Image (cartoon, rainbow over all chains, first blue to last red; front, side, top):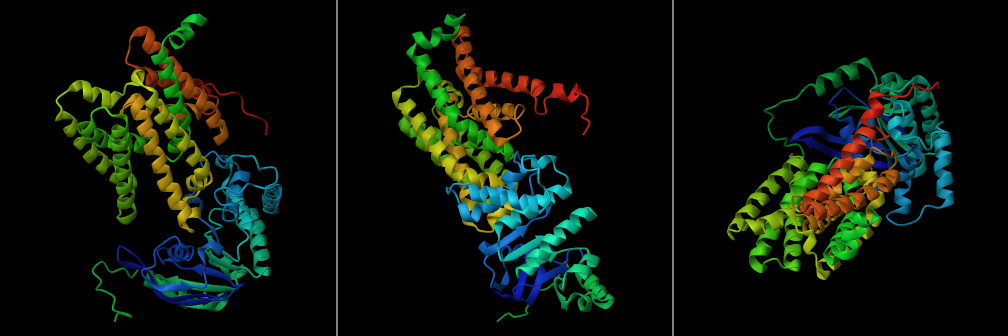
Length: 243
Length: 288
């Protein structure tokens, strides 16, 4: 299903983090969302995941229950006493809910997902003992288990070694081949150029969206940088779209 | 030796009731306490324990030391404070601990003021420190009922609670389960504090929840393991505290909490999972 973002505004203390954004994301697209710090990339992803309130505008064609969301590692409590297998099993929540019991097939699915991300043998390791890369592989395994048509990835390769990056990129490529919609926030422009067919360059508003090489031009990047720094403490009320 | 250990509980009905009552509180309070420590809500629980005071105090003014009155008063006050704190935290930029601290302080001051209207320190002592040796059949039924409801609700909420602890954003996407886990857990805290309040008083009730859970974490790595260690620790603390209180004529609530405190301190030093002894006298590192 195509995702339609229409006139979307998301604010932080009334200041726009995303300002009147309109975009269309067709089904099966692998889209990178890039932009400078403070451009609103993660804010937009959170809104798509149903994690934040929309101030104005709409996001249509996206049901939060059909979304698999990979958060930044900082959002996890790594000290919680849970094993890799149990973490991956949390991905079955939508199917099992409060009370449906875990079947043998469910367990096998989780084991297969763990193997697919190269973590075989780590099933019973506590997540607190994992390296950053291993934890990221576990989170990818959870996304695999969720088996959703839309996948949102928030900076999935932050502080990750090249081997893990290469292995997990293969997982994403597999999702892309299976026509899943992948929306990925990243700071790594080289990664976007190499792997992501399409890119949205944000600086609170959409600077450019389209084929990655056409979007990531020096001119566009410079414009994005200037716009994201354009924060006005004494700004007037925005009248765009007001009745 | 055996007679010293069992004598108070074979000869005296009030000690049997006290033991049954404290174990009933323990069996439901300890699992809740484990999640409180894992969610970093130990001090939140302490604040909640103070928050039930005005409800109990107003009920006491209206109906004396009535079991139902004190229970309903404590329950209502606890739930109102929990709901208000949660609402303020979700609606403003204040964090939940700050809004809870604000409401519990208002609540505590109100409670002390209401109790002082009766001008009797004995009554204040009863509310603050409980009276486990005076549990009658009705009180035991109440504690057993709260314990049963708590265990059943904990079983229902177990999955979302675990997910909420590890990755708070995961359930929030779908809305209802996250709120159910959050407010369900606050409800669990309040009903267990009210049960604990009858046995140990508002000030000591939190002890039976937090100390076994904190001690258990020094003996096991997994959630199941922590539960497996914490429950016997809680039971042994109740048993030991009651015995010490009997033989040395000490107040029972503090004796139970101090016994649990001793187990916690022993676990802190000797525990195989992060205990101080292991930290300062580590074994040689492994080859791979």
